[in-house]
Length: 133
Image (cartoon, rainbow, N blue to C red):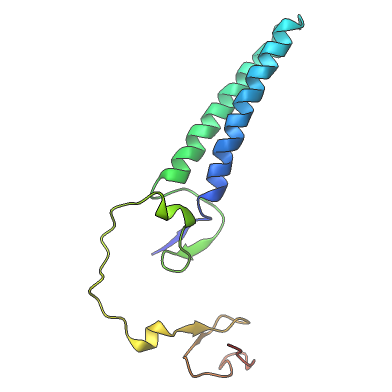
């Protein structure tokens, strides 16, 4: 199954950035209120905190959920493993009894045009460029 997933890193960075934004919003409110600024300035701090909390909740859910939302890259689940999967495990029905054929085990692709190559190809049948191992 192909899915659009950039990994969990950007979402976790969004969580940490949101936490920093909440701290900044609190600092903003305290500073604006203590210096006698008009009431609109502390309200900006409240809005800043509210937006940061929504961002933290969204990014945390996106970073820790099994099916996360993303717009970056289309990858196959076996093609690019997610680095945080070792920390966030899900019960997945894996079929470890199925045998893999030798042909699929050594499947390669041309780095220039993306054509599927067999393991003994030296040149790409589509673009003709030499394949280096």
